[in-house]
Length: 52
Image (tube, rainbow, N blue to C red; front, top):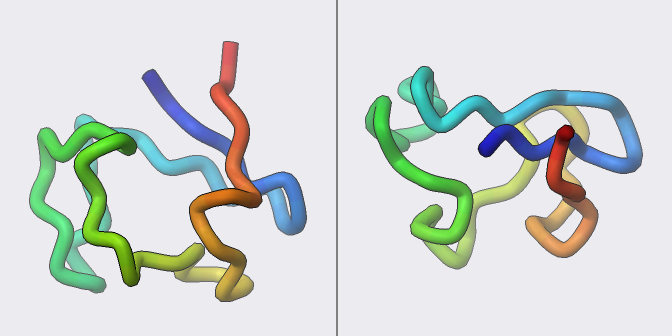
């Protein structure tokens, strides 16, 4: 499931991961490192919502 940042609209896609920030493709949102933040605006994971 994809998640969207409520503050800036960045979409985290687990199929892509976030390789620029050390998150491998295939990493589900729930399994992101605790210190991972939105790569665009720096929002915490609490500021993300599931994307339908």
